[in-house]
Length: 264
Image (cartoon, rainbow, N blue to C red; front, side, top):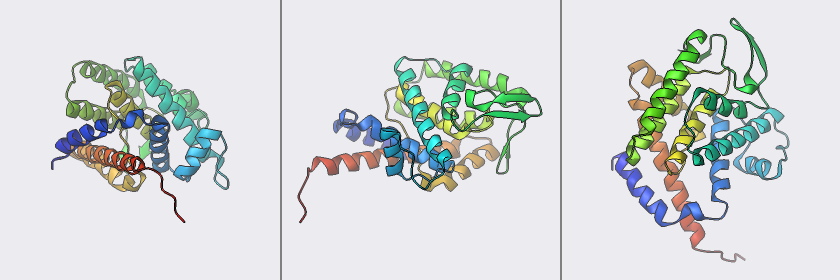
């Protein structure tokens, strides 16, 4: 079954199960997204450790404090973005910088580069060159204008999208173009994925995820899209990831609905 038809079918099943109304569903969903997103960026916390940290504030024992801070900040950034989606906030450069500031709150700081000094913990735009793997991103002097144009285009298209597939494609495109601009010294991947989630929430869709075990394929899809100058590879990848996450949530809900049974 083509991915978009599969997603439509899964969404019907998802909604029929009233998963969004389940107890603590928002917490579980945001913890899962945070766990996978930060794991992609190097966090060593398990999903259980991430959940304990978020619920109790207790850092994971035996793990770098930076990893716990990364997880906590990502979760707070995601909650912030979801709350702003409920307010129907328009995507602007300032809004994206606010998200980045939440993402980098505890792990960012002052950075000195060719163009001067800036504070990554406040979501300030980079002032120097940046690379990730073999990818060289736009010159820092171009970043403010590129980010502004990106926001204008995404905001305009956000007003007219209606079908599920068009909404998801736009959220995936926003993720791809923002991470390709790479406006910050660090936290670009996390921020771009949260912007994707913001757009999905804005249109009352379940939030998607990039699973940590798909990191290599995720990076490959980004690279293929840049080299081929078409977003098709990353859109196809993210659509499959979206379908997978829906399947996981449906399966878990169905198991829970069978009820508790004693085991002796």
